[in-house]
Length: 191
Image (cartoon, rainbow, N blue to C red; front, side):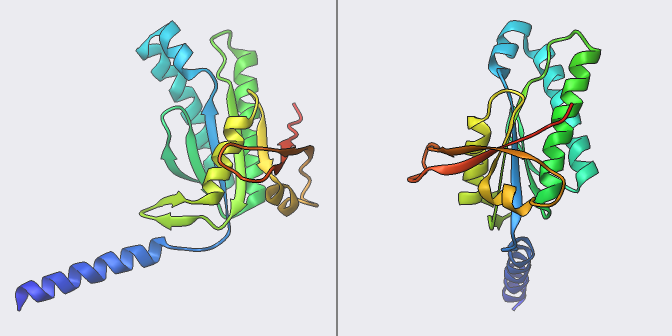
């Protein structure tokens, strides 16, 4: 009888944890990626590369804290984050790029160049991680971005209409893994 009760409790706990984590709401997923991180590691060595990574991590986490974002996971040379507010996600991207530009002007060290991608939709959440097409689109937009550029999906740009944010429509691009071209917008960062 005890075994059955323990097993029932474990099942209830697992079901409850899954229920709390599984929120099908609209979110904006944002990825950052340090440009040339492998080359920096090879050129400067592991210790210097870790310090380089810590600059990125601190700036991104500060921006997430200031804009209400949640770090989903560290990707090794970037961060995946989630936002309930699409406008906040774009403001986070702008804050990251500005902070990195200010650091570059103040220091003559190796600059940390970051590309950013963001997409809005209904990702699937499981065990505090996010999955499926919204996440894949955000990752592909990040990979497609130039150094020091933030790219967003058309849905992100539309959700930000009238919010004081500006984008450059880059037209449609074919992203790896997507059957159809995707309309892409570049976030305009005033410096």
